[in-house]
Length: 302
Image 1 (tube, rainbow, N blue to C red):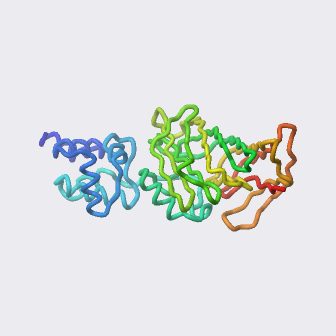
Image 2: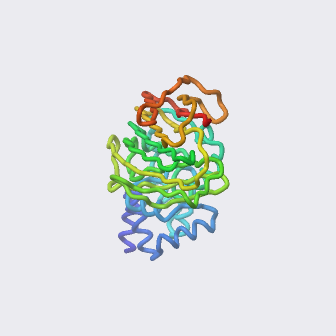
């Protein structure tokens, strides 16, 4: 194993050298995660697994610090792993905005994403198209939200989509459930009561290469029963087409409905337009060539 490790450190690639070093030292990934955490570096077991399989590469500054720490933990020569990474890959991706631009509890969200080994500014997947259907119950709450989404990989190694849901004021996150409907499965789920945030992994059955697309369909059920007056979807990066349909229980119908867009929380509404209920007690909007910002539908109750 010593000769094999020396050869791997000499010629790489990075993931082979890392995997060989871990095997040579006889450490589990959970043990490595614990040793890194003792140094204030929080890297999930899944990320370590992806690194040693070559499915992802460490690029963020914290990830690079973790690689340097791994050299010490695995008793390797200084820079033996970090040098195998080479220069960062060119990004060449469309400009986007930070989560803080679209969502006020951005720090809480970043912490929740970190627990899922997700990068807060992850740009690996872009939204090609999205169709959302909402059902408003007789109690004026959003009882069900179904999403059909087409994503495209702009980097190697994308194997999941991170779903973010924020309930209405008074939402009980313990009563929010996420269900995979088609072409994905639910992974880890994190909830934060004070901010009514729910974050979940929607796992693909394959690892996407650059240019690959994937279709997922999932549903969110919120049984909190809190009154809702609007629904908006945030886009951090340019996106293709977005369709939102909102259907109301005929027992309780709103008196005024309009669509809107805005640049961020607290910003004034742009491009507003009145919407009229159809015979199925529903309204919809269609938006194309979306730029970063928020788009949605708002309604008033009698």
